[in-house]
Length: 229
Length: 229
DNA sequence: CCCGTTTGCGTCATTTTAACGTGAAGTAAA
DNA sequence: TTTACTTCACGTTAAAATGACGCAAACGGG
Image (cartoon, rainbow over all chains, first blue to last red; front, side):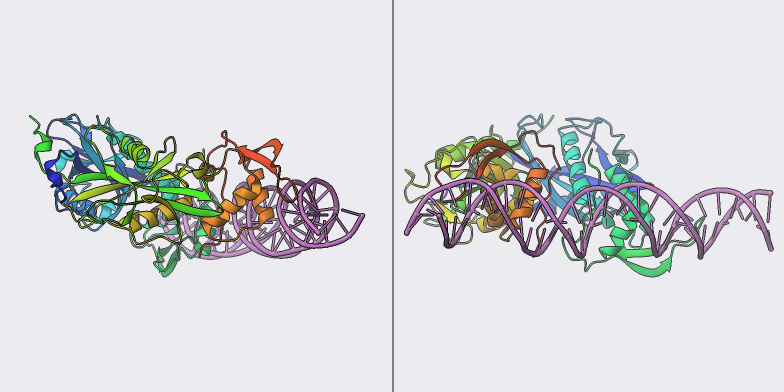
């Protein structure tokens, strides 16, 4: 008969989250200042251990809720990290997930967490504990390639947005310039977005039209081309 | 001080392998006939438990060596599977990897394993134990999308091959037809392959030129376009 | 030496892309 | 009210990529 597996020693299983937010033309990551050893007072990705009866997504949402107060966000599995030395406490396997959220939906920017949860510009990250810099790098790379063929950008914006805002998001994430007029044509031709007929008011100049994401968009119908470095 | 993690109960960690092979214009997967419960006498993906001091790749190679006699193959992490009910013995997390191998390099087709290790046409799979059908499906999907922009196809062929052979491989994996002449032009323009100057002898008709993979190929310089269904 | 087949190279109409022009809509200052 | 300046929305055009074929040389077999 089958043995009782849990009498064996098994590595611990952690879930670590790379939470991306976009605000003020800046792509940011949410980091947590650890209060305990190891890496006390270091910035790290929010994470937690998988409970015996939990799914990965269950752990993700538990972390999101308790450590950042967020729920209902885009989540996708990234990769699993197995470097035997990645946690000084012992063997811990980490399953990385990344999240895309619109910070405006939550009050984290001026949040109650005060000093221990903070957004960092992805270009100005502090030194991270564990192997979290590797996890972050992979997540950023994944986001950059994913946004080229999948409409994940909308997760980072308000429900209604202008083409210019979408354009700026793409330039910000891809760290390149994309011709404004060609971008517009591509987005519209692909029926990526739907014109709501309303306009954004209160701006300096001509009022741009507001669009929303086309949820009926058929898969694989979109491809942004960018000069890869 | 930090607690001893391994005194907690942790899920077991298994590694499951989707091993692809290509032969006779057929894409196949290597399956194992289980000799033990659960799923005794069922076909399953080769797999094994992660040892405490092992990396995922270490486990992969141990499985490959002991269960199939192979080594030195292309391996890539696929996804991690956490369905709590996926293993009737208890909570087992599976990290899926997929491998691309050239069956001609190993003697598995007429191998010593006799009945318990066998290649199956990906279109004629038996019912699989655990959630291995899901793992296989995801691996197949990954291979299909990967081959469009990454030269993984070469892992499945001999070191020297003809354009026609490469063309047939693409049609087989993508399950579509690709114009022979356009495919050739694309492959050659992208400097995907290098002409060795030699020809394959002993064939019926005109002797085709033999090529090898261009290892200096710059990333992202290649994109096959296919009518997605 | 002809036959049927595969291979390798071309052609060409159409589509897609990249680069850039321009006038309308809006605000602020003159 | 007029002028200046900015953003927005829509065009234009040349170059490049794509898709759908044509065709002749190279081969083995009858």
